[in-house]
Amino acid sequence: MENAATAAVPTTWYKQAEFYFFCVVSFVGKSALLIRLPYREWPVNTFYTCSLLLGFYLYLRFRQGLKAPLFVVFSLAAAVAVDILGNKFGFYGHPFGPLRDYDEFAHFAGSGFSAVAAFWLLWAGMRKLGLKLSSGTIAFLSTTVAFTYCGWYEILELLDELWYGDFVRIHTWDDTPNDLFYDFLGVIAFVAAAGVVVARRARRRADLDVDLRPVRLSRLLSALPRDLASFFVATTLFSLCAWFEIFTMFDQMASGRIHFVGNQDCPLRLRWELGFCVAIALAYSLVSNVRRRMLTTEP
Image (cartoon, rainbow, N blue to C red; front, side):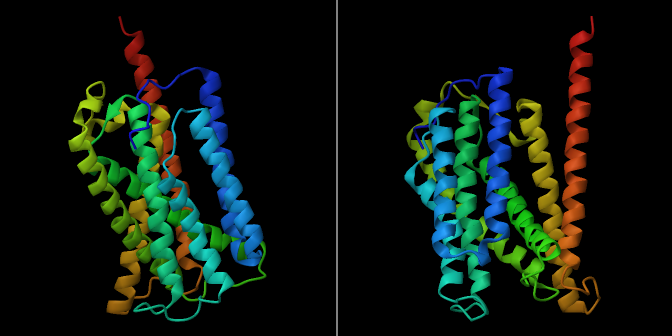
């Protein structure tokens, strides 16, 4: 992790447009991989995954000056490999160790590995911005980012059924909230381990952080660029919505109160909740920009 640069991020319109383009292409590419993942042969999924990882590494290495450690690339590959191997060897639909189905392990491990990559990317990105965040703050942010992507994956399963309809992805009313529950367990476990490692390294190499500006979690939004702050607003809100769906499942199981009837009820709610969270984040960005312009124009 010591390879992350600490120089200020260029703010030219070209660099910003390039970064936005990379984010959109990466998001669309990963979504296209996941939405039809169970239908493809494993060599195709492997080639698709390696191509995405190569693009991710090359962009960060040569356009952002961030050299992703080997374990980060491995984590991103392992997050997809867990699903590929489960489909190839027919693990799905069968108990796996103490778990009732391999699917629960796949969500735990896959989400956990993805969270490790999110943790490193946020840690390196904040250093590149010249900001020093505590390992706890990075852990919180990476948890919201990884958990948001977990919720998006559940929405992709819904879109798979609605758009294609050639395969059942959501089998029972509690399929989606149960997946989210194991997603969250994996994210928490892997992020906690990453946080311990980073905290220990930070104590040993505190002299490398003298040029960074310490930022507390309470002051984080004001210290970040507006677009990045809005992104974290959306991920935090959507993570809370996903947690609400998990608690709703537990309530239905424990009390008998009916919250979910059909198999698609939970992912349908997640889709609307994600849209609502994005709308709030956009409104926050708009209000922040207007306020900043008003402050700069005041005599």
